[in-house]
Image (cartoon, rainbow, N blue to C red; front, side, top):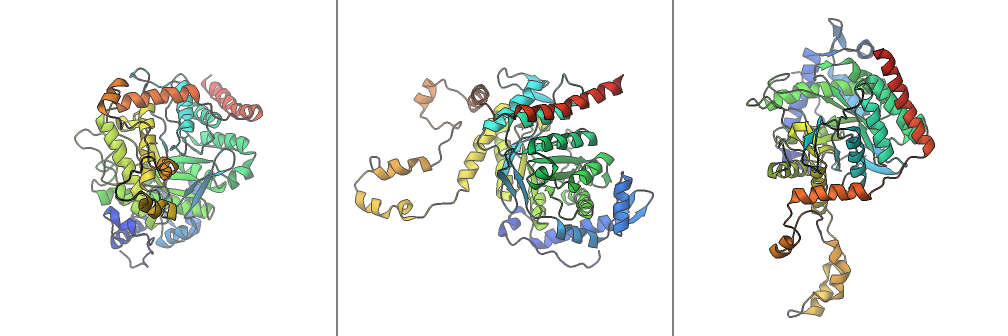
Length: 488
């Protein structure tokens, strides 16, 4: 490897808690730079190749691009260390930086575990709407993704329907996924209609695009089109190459991560060449490996989590986390345990935009009941990290003296004034056995399912104005008409 200047790590000591001392982070970074310069990346979009070539990258074999380290360092200098997202009404909602953590569901599950019947089935359009409405109601869910991929719709317009459903049924920030580049253009057009125009959306973005890339070293055309389009418009996006150790990357944790992260840095370079300062969110997952016993890609594995988050902080980039999920097939003890463990891990590690809450079956199935449980766990974690008040009233020295060694605080005014400050769960049971039995002997899963039903019965999200709703629907309708014309 060439000798290159070391990047200064973020001074926060917690970075070293994830089995990644500063010299190791530098070593991984150097390895990624070597892969970019020595091996190179294939870019399947001529426009992207031209931009990189003009900036000084070497191109061979048509689209194999070798990126020099100075372009990476330049991109890391111009990429913002904070990405701010707003809600639908223009209020600041998410400050993606440092160790700030925000939580939301994932997208596009092929199955739903119906909380009303317990049936595992294919999702329908109403499931997409209900998921958005429930996310809008849950207090610890900070952003929304389309949790389900609906059947009964033309696959060419499912992503437009998903975006319309989210825009209509939540005011929270939205992370959207599209099937192809044209879907991204339509999604942004819908968001612009809600924001009041392109400039308004650029100034206060309330949407973020989740871009999946074929692999770290093979950057597909549509991912690159999305990257250039969104960076030009100052709309945040995540850029997530999909690599699997033992299949599309080395099986070792470090090797799998390097193969993935070289692709992340390649995308970062392209975004910053296209528009310096474009908001870029790095993946907090990467270095995954197939389970070689089952050939399933696990969602709740512990291996790569500390590495990816620590490297995200090393680069001073916002981090896209993955937690609140399980490889279990039903809402059982494994589901709750893995949801809690992954949420704790990403929260402590400082992932910023944490998605996939409510996932089961390694991302194949979604559960609104598990989403409610995850909301409860996040509330617990937020109380865990809540600053402790140390003012005179909280210290209560006078109250202790007044009550004395033999008194009781149960009847004291101080207790009535402050008892609500302590943590009280909504779903986790703290009652004695007799009272729990008298209330029906319910399990956590049963209480979560009941909560999901109750919130869906009671909560009505703030609607779009009729004019805005029509403008959004016009985009969906035109896309459907185009798709129908292509089928005939």
